[in-house]
Length: 103
Picture (tube, rainbow, N blue to C red):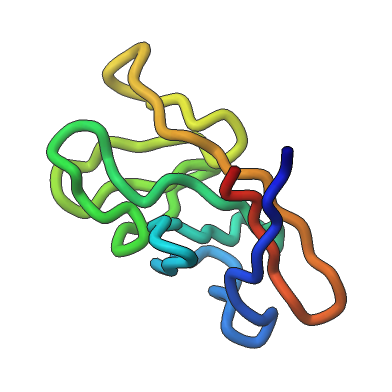
């Protein structure tokens, strides 16, 4: 069952081309804005547990600031190395609230 919780307000969300870290109910989230569309990912890079929300956007990927592993914001798949991934969390906007499903 879905557990939708408020991650932040739209005014607090990152502008296009940026990422940020957020935490809700003990879950660390990377919130990315690619071309005006928000996506939520697990904030922990599987390589060395780097904070993805402190990284940057390249194309449609969030790049880890520690060792430059890049993860597609829609699929969570790494560009390199193959078969690595992070979880993509369902996200929706209701009014001025950004909600994420942490189930």
